[in-house]
Amino acid sequence: MYVAIVQNNPITGSMRENAERALESIDALAAGPYPPDLVILPAFALTGSPVDGLCYSDAFAAEILDVAHAFMERASLPTLVGTMIPRPLEDILGFVSEPEALFCRDGSGGALGFVDINNDWGATSYASSVSVALDGHTISVLLDDYPEPDDDFSDSEIVIILLAKEYRGTNTMLTSSEQLGFLRSFVRKNNIWMIVANLVGAQDGTVYDGASVILRPDGTIADAAEPFVEQILTCNIKLDGRPVGLGAGRGQGVGQASGQLGGQAADSRVIKPLLPYAADWRALELCVRDYVTKNSFTDVVIGLSGGIDSAVTATLAVDALGAKHVHGVLMPGPHSSKGSVDDAMALAANLGIDTLTMPITQPLEAFRALSQEVLGQEGSFLARQNIQARIRTIHLMHLSNTFGWLLLNTGNKSEAAMGFSTLYGDTAGALAPLGNVYKTDVYGLALWRNGQSPVIPPAIITKPPSAELYDGQTDQDTLPPYEQLDYILRLHIEDGFGVDQIRECACQEPDGDKLTDELVERVLDTVRDAEYKRRQEPLAPSLGYLDMGMDRNWPLTNGFKDRHRDLKPDIGLTDYLRMIRGWKQPEGWDFLAN
Image (cartoon, rainbow, N blue to C red; front, side, top):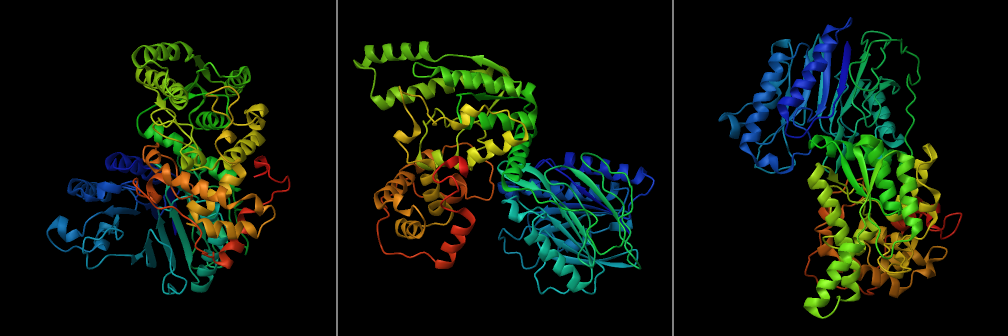
C-alpha cells in the first residue's frame, strides 16, 4: 500500500481555502507516476486548530459539513482527513448519523468527522477511533490522540493517528526519544505499521510542530517529515513481505518518489532531535510568520532600543519574514546612551533592515511644558518615566496606521510577570514573540542564534539591561538579578510554589541563601500586584510554559499575600526541578550561562 501524508498548515476557519489547497496536493499526487493508494491529512486539516469560540457557532458547524462533503466528492484519491464537527451530529442534521459514516464514501475519497469531545454538549457517544477496510487491509484510525499502552490493535495491519499536537517544548515532539520510544514499543507489541500525521503551523499563540512519522512493525522509522514546515511524505508499505519505502518530498509541495528504504532492522531516516533553543526559535519564527501572513499583513514594525529583547525580536522577524518586510524604529530620548543608538544601528545593518529615527525629546518637552502650564508641575518621577514609553508607542502606532505595518511587541515573560513595563506604552503591540520567554532564555536564544550567524552585536548581549528612562538606570535598580528572579518565577508560575516551597528548594541548592525570605516575598507580591497589567499584554506564543495572560489569571482585586506556612514541596519534584533546571551554572550566577 502506497501512502502519502500531507503535513499541511491550514488557516483556522478558512475551510474552503484549506480544502482547495489540500485538493491541489491530492490532484498533484494523483497526476504523478505513482499515485498513492491512500492520502492522509492530520486532524483539523480542513478547519484549522484551535477553533476556540467558533465551536459554539451553528453556522461554523454547517460550513464544516458542507466543506467535508464537497471535499469527499472532489478528492481524486482515497483520502483520510480529520475534521471537527463541533456539535453532536443529531443536533446539526436533525437525525443521528455516526461520524464514521463520512469515511471513504464510494471508495473514491473520504473524510472522517468527529465530535470535539473536549466540549460538553451532553453528547451520549462519539467516535474516538474507527476501523475500516481498504483494499482488503484492516486499518484503525485514532482521532487526535495517542493510543493507551494497553490498547490492542493486533487485529489491524496499520494504525493511523491523525494529530494536531501542540508544540510544548522539545520533549513533546515526535522527534524526542520519549515520544518515539513509546511509539516504537507500541508497534512492536501489536506487530503493526503506524502512521502519525501531525498538523504544522501556528494559530494565534499555539504552534503545531509537524514531524509526522511512519514506523514499521519492528519499531524502526520508515520515514519522517521535517518539523515546523509543510511537507508531503510518501512511503510504500508492503504488508505481505519486506517493507519497501519511497522517499519523502522535502519542503513545500509534492514529493517525488525516490530511493529504497529497505527492510533492514534500522531506521531508514535518522531523526535528529532539535535542541531546546533551536526548537524554540523555529517555533517562534513559525508563529511570527503565520500570525503576520494569515492576518493579511506583509510587514512589521519594531522599536529598536539597542537592548536584547528588541534585538532578538527583530532577528526573529527577519528570519520569519525576510529583511525587506521588517522596519526598525530608533526613538532616542534625553536619557538614551550613544552606545544604545550605535548598537541598534549595528543590529539593523547586520540584519539588512531599514530604519527610521524618530526622537522623543521634542514631543516630551512639549508635554512637560503643557503639564507645567496646567498642573504647575511636570508630573511625578514615575509619570516622567512612563510618558517616554507612551510617546514611543505613539510613534510606532503612527507608522503602523500610516503604512499598514503590524507592530511587534518586544516584552518578555520575566518583565510581564513583574509588571516591569508601561501600560499603554511598551505593552502595546499585536503579538509579543517573547511574551512567554523568561529573560534568561532570551539571552540563551540570542547566543544560540549568533551561533548560526553572528547578527546580534556582542555589546547588546553583554551590557546591563536598561529601559533608559532616567540617567544611569538599569533593570536591577527595580528587579532582582534576572538569574535569581527567573528561578523564583519558574517555581511560582510554572509549578505553583509559594514562599515556603521556593525557599525549601533554594535551601537545598548551592548559593541558595541568596534567595532570602524578603526577596521571595517581594517577588511574589509584585507578581500578584501586576495582574491588571498582564491582562492587557499582547498575545504571545506558547512554548510549553504557562501563559501568564490566558492560563494563570489570578483575580485583579486580590488581597491574598503569601507568607510562611511551613509548606513543603514534594521531594521528588524538588529533585526533578533541580535536575532539569540547575541552580549553579559553570560560570556561577551569570545569566549568560543559562
